Image 1: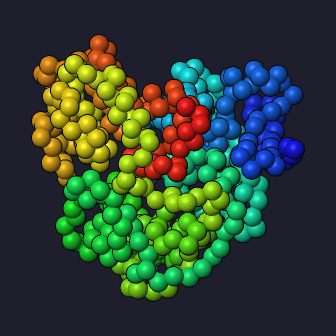
Image 2 (image 1 turned 60 degrees about the horizontal axis):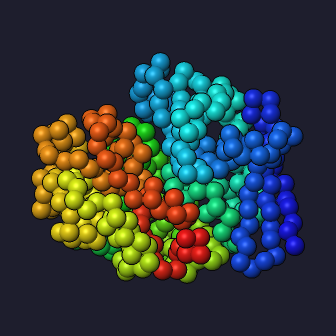
Length: 415
């Protein structure tokens, strides 16, 4: 038996849309979030997927605030991409120009709103997402917008409880990727952020995405200054943990700055308890997803002359998977001073034309769309290979890098 709950309404360009949550009593049937209105429902779902990118709206608003506050200097007459998300296997892009917000879906303009109207959309979305979780004391605005956007709307649908507890800073763990491309967990004293604050040289690569126009050093400086001026937590922004694990899921910069400023003090943290979660931690083991990726590579890359776009941990993992089975000519990365050593030339984008290649592997999940556009501009004749395009065609619910899944984290019955 299915039950429906109206989570709230969104008004866009004088059209009101209701967001409905359908709860199923069937154990194997997950809850659904759907958009509906007085208009033809099937037409809306074909042309209007706004709610599917609701978390992207939160990220877009944070980016706009950064622009309007002057923290990111931009040309006011040029469109700035605020957010790019995969929705229903197509791309939704949110852009900003002269206080107008543009929503583009599948290479077409979906709609445009003035920023003041967008702020109301943002407030509507906040209410809807908080209603989706439905737990007293939880506010989606306490989560980092990039963190939330990466995980998507259904991440919130997994939360069944929240708790605020105190922990010592030195008991918390942070994750990094070592020079061998393996995930490692370590205390905050060994985190790259804490080491940068202490002036200690950093080795390995760290999984980090910042806001527009913001380097990691700038973000560390801003958070350090904010804690000194406003204390912790500021505006309800807590360090986030999952279930009873001590690995920091959101707030590594805040935790490292607190340790640097005050030592091993006890601080309050937000614990999100997620259902259907055996472990949210990235895994170094190989599961069925690795086998599928290997088959896709075998079927598409034999006898091709290959360049790999991206020189980070994704490429380290990819090379471990394919070994020396393919004809790889070079690695293309804008930062040629790599933390990883590769047995191939590492070149800038503009030097790719000097190499005899016919195929470019896109070696990134988060930045793959931008990478594909950049390669197309260099040479539209290249065969551009994106493993995630193939996985999505198989109706797999891929939301992060292929090597971050283990055998319990993919719904194989969809294949």
